[in-house]
Image (tube, rainbow, N blue to C red):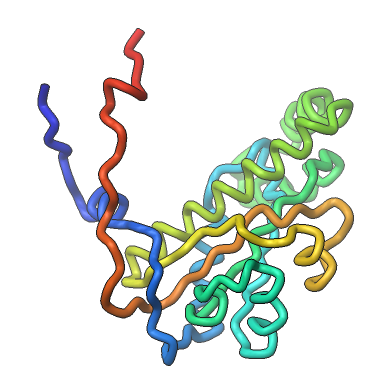
Length: 210
C-alpha cells in the first residue's frame, strides 16, 4: 500500500502539529494577534451559518489565576500566552435572519432564500434539546480546530483541554445559560522539549471503503 502523503504547506502544518506541554512563559501575544487567531477560527463551518460560538481569551495574569485552580491546575493555563475558553451556544434558529443578512447584503444569497434556511433549521433543532446541545459542541470544536492549525501555521504551540470544572468556569467567567464551555485551548510560543506528532492507528483499523 502506498503510505506516502502528498504534502503542501497546509498539510505539513496539520501533520506536524502535536499538543504542546512546554511553553515560553515569558512570551505574550498581542491583542491583535489573538484577534487574528479567533478571526481565522470563525471561518470554520457552522450549520445554517449559525456561528453559535464565543471565545474568551484569558491572557492576563489575574485572569489566568482565576482559571487555573478550576482547570485542574494545569500548567498550560499560566505558562501559555493565552488560553481560550471555547464556548458553544445552544442552537437558537431565530438568529438565522440576522446571521444571513450580511450574505444578502453582499449579494451572496437572495433574501427570498432566508426562510428556506430558517424553517428547516427550526424543524431540525428547536424541538430537540439534545440536537441543540450537540450542535453547540460541534460548532465550538470546529472553531477550536481552526485555531489549533492557524496557531501551528503561525509558529505557535497549542493545547486543547477538557480537564476543568465546567460549572465553575461557566460561573467564574459569566457564561450565559445557553452557553457551554466546550474546551480550553492554550496557545503560545513553545520552548524545547515538546513531542513531535504521535503515531496514529493504522488506516486499516479506522477506514472502510464501501
